[in-house]
Length: 178
Image (tube, rainbow, N blue to C red; front, top):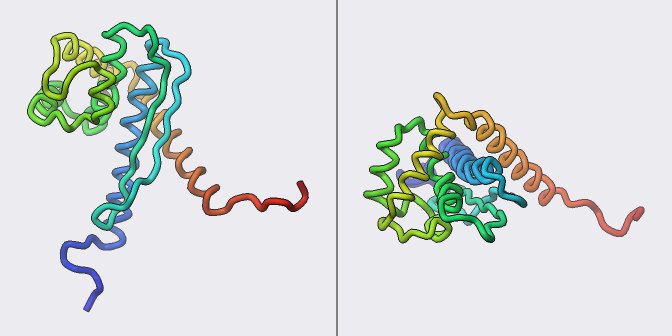
């Protein structure tokens, strides 16, 4: 008899779930980066990292930092929604699906992204929807001018996370030859 219960994913399934979650986190943060840079915001940084394991799988999270001082509301909203929009574009959703999802399930966008947008979850302005549609047009895989940039940035975030993990597993020895 196996040590795993029926609800526990197999090691192969856990690895696949973790990889999907890592890609999703990378695409989300890449969305923020790409849109912020496209809009000319300086000092944009992002990372993805493993979070505490949940339900026998690794959960990936990310963060993006950029200078938002003196940024107009429209630009702020565009950067705020870019993560959720990038994920929708990655899943090849149409804009109406994204609109409906955020309207019905505002928790699909992180609390920090809602705060950046200046809107309360589920209580959004017309300016919010207009900004979201503009970002969607730029990031969608069929006609978006920023789609390939989004993919490159997501790959870069995944590679950065991989290098960070390798470095933490094999830190440089201290005190010898230095």
